[in-house]
Image 1: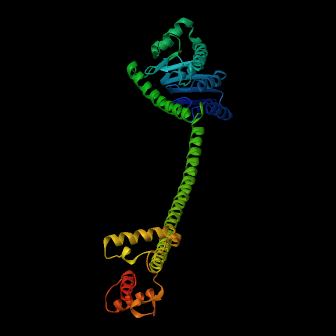
Image 2: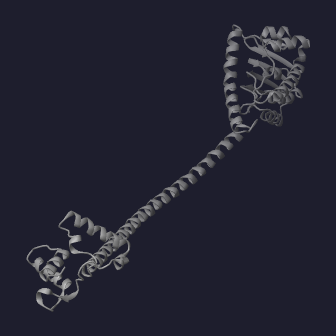
Length: 384
């Protein structure tokens, strides 16, 4: 904050030009400026004000710093809200004829429950009492001051003079500013600060940091951003690992599918081989039963549908129980080595001759079943 030492070397000009509590217009900075000016030799001060007001406790701190010094106040545009009671700290208060002053009740932004708002009301009432004490230099009654503050009263330089808020009017030979223009300028300034304050309240509420300074909120937001970035990186790594595991799982599933297909193929091959072996065994047992005379060749002759059905029925029974043939009685001529009636006492081996006949027919391109060959051999030798 700037100050200026005047030619008399004992008077310093200090300034409140803007919203109180914003940037360098704080009680701390203002008090430091007074100390710097005093270190430079200042014994008395001229305070030049053009301010829409601002934070009440910052203003109270500035008021107190001025109240213990020799100060002349000059209102040079607007002394509204908390800036108006800072002006009351002057031993003498001057106001340019085209300037305005405004007094009103203190107000604030808040968020909370009913109990909290009751406490806020109590605090505002106490602050109002402090402000009214500053306005006490006017000699106005508490009732009149309360009415003016409740109604938010705007005062021209002459009105401020009449009510003893100031001691002198500085003439400028200019048309005094209208109240309407002054009010518009004030609220444009206040709305700017209000929007900022509302935004701060929303951020404080969202971060659960009531009353936190702008610097603290920025630091908290930066910490949240940093934490979010770290979480994002962790999630990216987790997602990459999940994707990798998915790919590995898919590869395992394909491997299992291939192993399952191979196992199924092996089981089918084994089953087919077992069925083939079983079929071959059943056919061998059936042929043996025919040789032993337990089944007549004509009974299972495949040249007829009935013979086919019976042959298949015998094979099915044999597959279920290969021992079933052992229980069958001999019902025809045993087709093993015997004596052929047509060749005297020469032994006849029907199965072997039947096999040889099948082989001979095969060489000629004629297909003959073993059963047919047996029948023909038996006919040849007159066997039944």
